[in-house]
Image 1: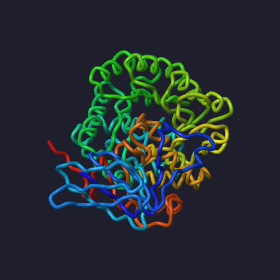
Image 2: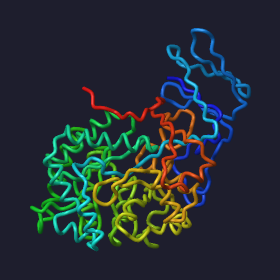
Image 3: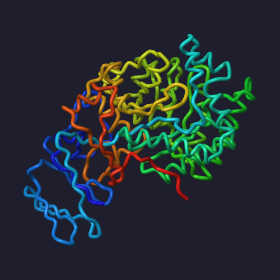
Image 4: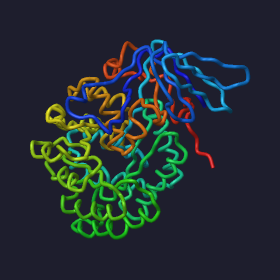
Length: 443
C-alpha cells in the first residue's frame, strides 16, 4: 500500500541524519516540519517535506506518482497498488511509541493486591505473603498457551490503538523451565500475528519460587544450566534480564546469570534500583546492558557509572505512580548529560496499563520533563532501549512506517497536557492503516 498523508499541521520527530539516541541538553530538541506531507510505500517512509514541495498525478489505471518541485528525483508507488491519500488538516503525525519494558503476557489481574496496597501493605510485604510475581506465576502455570495468546493479543490491540508501534515483552511469570518456555513461545506467536514490532526478553530470574526458599543459589543454577540453554536452543529470546534489587536477586547472582546469557548471544537488560541502591546499575554497565530500568534509587555513583556507557537509563513512571514510589532523579540525570528512555512496565501487579500517552503525561507532570524531552524519551530513546532505533523511533527516510496521526490538536505540547483522553485518531504500522476492530488469532 502506498500512502500520502498531506496537509499535516506538524510532522514530529523528523530525522535527516541517523541518531541512535539523544542525551542531556539534546533531549530538549524535537525536530519538526510544519505544513508537511509524508509519502509511504512498501512499508517504508519514502520521503517527506513541506506542503508546497510536491504534486500528485494519478494517470488512469496507474499507480500514483509524486513529482517533487524542489528536488530532482521522482517517487513512484508500487506498480500493483493505488495511492491512498489521507488529509491530516489540523492534525499532527508522530512516530509510534516504542514501549521498551513490559510484562504483558500474564494470566489474570491482581486487583485484590491493589486493595492490599490501599490498606498500606508494601510491594515486598505482598510478595512475602505469596502475592506479587508468585501469584502471577501460579496463574500462568494453569493457563494454556492458547489462552495466554488470546489475552495478550487483546492487550496488544489496546496499546496499538493508543499509539504504540513496538513493544518489548518479558517472560518471568513462569519461574520453571517449562513455564518460562511457554511464556516465550507465546511471545513468539505474538510476533507472528501482530503488526507491532515485538522483541522478547528472557527474565527467568524475576523472583524466587516458594520451593527454592533458602536455596537461592540452586535456583540461579537452574536458570543458568537449564533455562538459558533451552531458551537459546529454540531462539526464543533477544535479551536476558534479571530483577537485581533488595529482596530479589543480588549483584553476584545477576553477574552469573548475565554472563551465562551472553555466552548464548542474549544481550542484558536489567531491572535495577527500584527498591534500594542495589548495585544493579553497575553490574548492568559492566556487561554492556542495552538498558537498566526503574532507577528510583540513582545517585552520583550510578550516574558516573552510566556516563560514557552504551546503556540506556530507562524510567518506568507507571510503576512509581501505581506503587507510590519515590521518583527517579530525572532532571539530575539529564543535567549530567545522560540520555533517558521511558516505558510503561505494563504488568498486572505494579503497572496495569500500557498506555504510553499516560507515560508521556507522567514524564511531564511527575518528573518535570519538558514535552520535547518526554517525547524523545518515548520514541527515539525507547527505540534504542529495545534495540530498534535503526528501524523505528523517528520519522526518517527508509525507516519502517510505524506512525500515528492525531485528532486535531493545537500542538505536540497537547499530548502530555491532555492526560485523560486518547489523542490518536489513525494508526499506521508497517505502512498499513490499522482499524480499531482488533486482531484475531488465525491459523
